[in-house]
Length: 331
Image 1 (cartoon, helix red, strand yellow):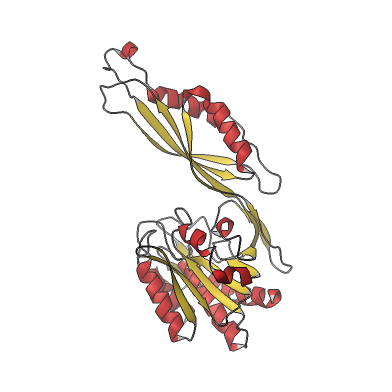
Image 2 (tube, helix red, strand yellow; image 1 turned 45 degrees about the vertical axis):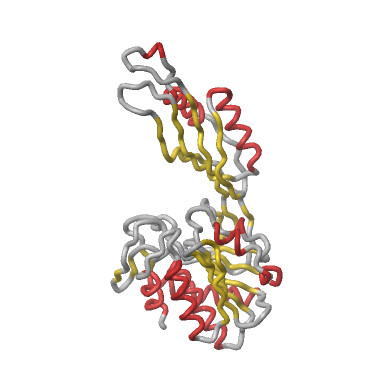
């Protein structure tokens, strides 16, 4: 199956986070038909990581995720681009990695494996399960794929997901003095947060905050007794100084609920590749047992997650060449 055809076929299978079973079955059948040993590693009902190898102790693994953000967008194409959900994040990457692995195999290089995970877009659940796989201990290098414009990312920021919650006292809105607005308390906290410069790092860059979701109140004529804001912070430091800064901002006005976090990661730099630090996070922080991490993939992160997501066909072809060259250099 050719590179572009494989990309389109993968994209034609909906696999929004939590619903990756069908695309995992497709990959299993495709790889087994080509002689790979394939394991479906159970993560949750309807969710399996795909782990494939040619020998029993692969030193280098190519990896990315099978899930996408919603909504499903069927693939289309023109002479230059493939459009649709997963084109660059990350089904085009899967196709490029498999094509590269088959090219290496044709040259007699079989010291490679393929690891494709579920749920990266939400909580990296698949990666956390994969980290305990016995083959991880035998892996020397893990080449993870995300849209990096085919540059070799030598660092990626972490992600800190949390909620800021406030409580008030419900009352009739005609008599506001009888109640206490949780929303107004939350707004005061968020205003302070917006004007606080959080600790950053010279290598990874600025720590940034996204005030992502807001919820609260009961009805228009009721003083709101509860409110919350979901936040995502792109980490460039350890979690402790960020957590301490948030708790100092919130004080006794509310509470901080930490949902999940992944730390920033420095990755292996290899000569001969254009290098940069990326602002997003990946499965890599949750795969520490899988050797030294590297990060490279076709497509732009600015196109990922958008209604017009696309990948250039030329970038997919270039990614194949880069993966082949990178594996040869590592081996």
